[in-house]
Image (cartoon, rainbow, N blue to C red; front, side, top):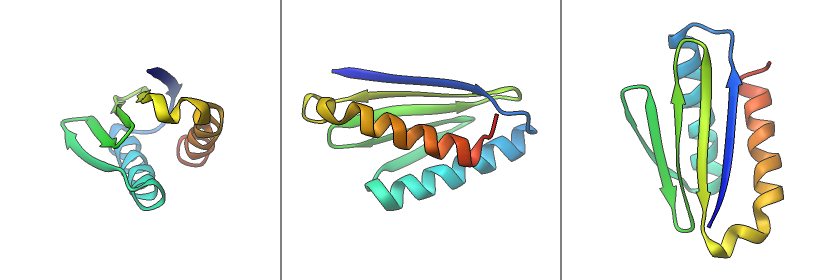
Length: 92
């Protein structure tokens, strides 16, 4: 297993940050076929070989992803793509 952990200050209201997270999740669902569900301000997602959660509060957004063995070799590419999504949805 391999983990990807990203934490970023967002500079938005909680409602705006959650809306950005929802937009990001919808794009990820479409592009990577991720299933996700919200529980409060924490979104959990999964698909075969990937599981994680995205949490939003009034100051930060944090992403924790666990990659399965088959996706370990793709970790650098996946991490670049995630940073691109963060840059688009939570510019620092």
